[in-house]
Image 1 (cartoon, rainbow, N blue to C red):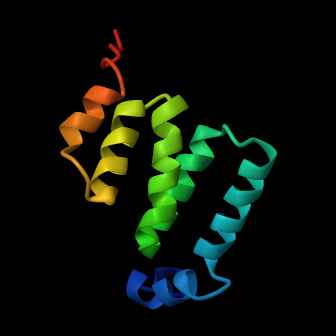
Image 2: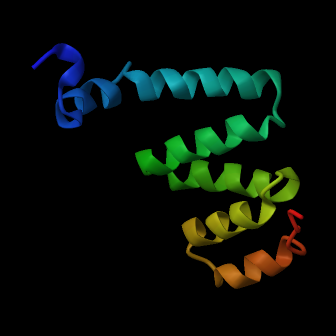
Amino acid sequence: MQDDDRPLSEVMPALLRPGGLQELAEAALRRTLAADPHDTDAQWKLAGIHRRQGDFAAARDLYRRLGVHGPDRRKAAWLHAVLGGGGPPEAALAASGPRRSCG
């Protein structure tokens, strides 16, 4: 088996260890948001990283911000509600405004 054919289970520790790719991606996204706090693409990606790391408070804060000004407010509001363990996601969806049509 060549190095690039290793199963994901062998590569995953390198991705998740301190200084691994996930940490590098997180740092790059933080720099992006420092330069442009309204970059919704960076907010979505960073929220996903926080969620996978189990840092639900940080992910929830980003979803809250996306629920205010993001292009996919309904999804952000739903994720914010689910991660908060609060009221039903349907209430969060109603609060985020009407559903937008794509066509």
